[in-house]
Amino acid sequence: MAIIKWDPFRDISGIQDHINKVFEESFPRIRIKDRDNPNLYAWEPPVDIFETDTDVVIQAEIPGVHKEDVSVEVKDNILIIKGDRLPDEKSGERNYYRQERCFGTFQRAFALQDFVDTDKIGAHFSNGVLEVTIPKPEEEIPVKIRVEADEEE
Image 1 (cartoon, rainbow, N blue to C red):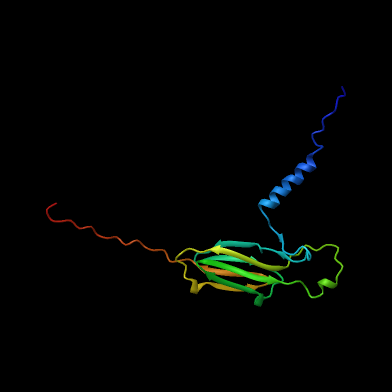
Image 2 (spheres, rainbow, N blue to C red):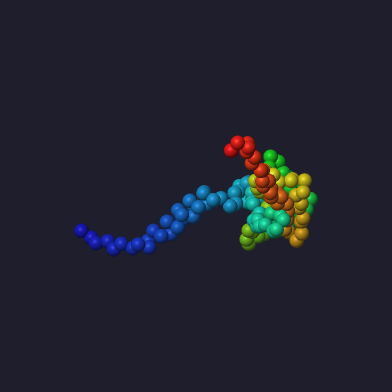
């Protein structure tokens, strides 16, 4: 009987490929929209969400998108940011060595609190960053109600 030496690192690349596949299926970041045109992807712009003393602010990073190609709307208490980032007109004429920028339609949705005044939500676009400002609702101050009792007690 021949003795076969066991190499624990022999199958490590196969394991890594399997782990990558599981993560890609579980947490898809970029999904190919059109397999015939790999330049067009469904993409989600990264966002930062933070609060100030008076507002909740959402900043979406959307470089290369024109102001007229972006919309912000509220429907059923959900804030929706959507738009399009189109490839350069000359991109079809180029012979790329590598192309990592994604183009196509994007959409992000965020649930709002029930008592947000949607008429006061503002949006500003500058240097490829869309900033949506949502005013915080005024805190309700509890009203003390005096409890009265009958004179007999």
